[in-house]
Image (tube, rainbow over all chains, first blue to last red; front, top):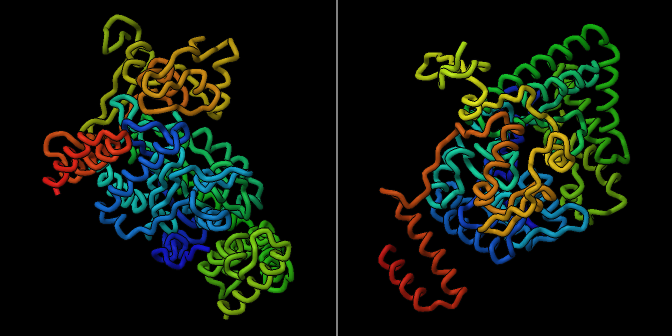
Length: 357
Length: 163
């Protein structure tokens, strides 16, 4: 089993609830897709090509100050529970970790993890540079990844076309190769049934939404990842400004919805959030999805000052450590253990008792 | 109103750009607008890529003409492969399928013209010497893999000098 505590800040800096608007926005992440000129794209490449790409990237990483300190993992050499652990921590995609059904990670699939992001190697594109920040922080997340991109681009020949920009395996990423996502908690809009309108509105302004784990994942616990849909025809600052403007509006709608709930249905809201807290504190068996939904209720209660003494950081920690692979690793159980819901409930009770006065 | 660019056809698009803090509005005809990378088809398709690529094969408003046999000289990928997988084989596919992709990109993104960061690959004047070294090491690896030991020895010497 890999030891994630070896990672800089445990790879969790982005969940420390230190950023802007932590009650609504959990984290901001930006990724840049880059490919090396002269090498077949990863999905189409032979194993030997992918290993050659990895070697070039590792050589370049040794010359790059930010990456010299990075912790490297070869996904193709890790067991499934370890790969799932990295995925649950949002450090690698499901595809890179080879978690789809019976699939295996590709040869040369790797990730370099830094304190605030890292680089996935041999994902759909040769390189996926990632920057992560706690809270709503598009500019900060971009500043970091931009310098990493510039540094690597001086050392490695990126595939670039004067008209189409940075070339990617999928045409939906071409141009800037930039996808910025804001992980946002929208229980107010869900409870007031305004969420569909907001999500439909996003599509009309060129944005899209995904679930907690990004592309192809379900929405659980009222967490949505809002991100730009298009990557070509607009500059990086324009894409970020547009996303930032719309996310600010969504935050405003969410805050209005929460106000409305407090005004129109104070008893129902209070009852709902305290019930959620009560279940987390006393339940003897909790599924992951149920835990996410209960945490959503408590998070709402904390942001409305209905539940005192619970810190957002504690809730973020629960969000991470109640996931199947994390919980199994923490409690020394196998990932498919049928007793996991019981173990989860025990863990939640213990953490709340320790961290809530 | 006539097109500001060609002065021949009627202008149908107003393109407003901000240059050096001042707004410039160009009145363009459809052809000139397309040349500048502006989508003129009105509604930009919002459907996921799979639907869009799927629509290529279903007659009617086919995006791609029936040129399945078109093949990328670098990686051997064909347009049919792209249609089936939604992914391209290598960076050169963009040049090999240029015309088809331009149309697709306009539909996907509303434009086919990259306006973001420009990139200059390592190796030009004043290039980072570390990049030269990394490139030589890569060439060395390939030479050893292909058992071209004469070239490998020469590359090793050049690397030593740089180091």
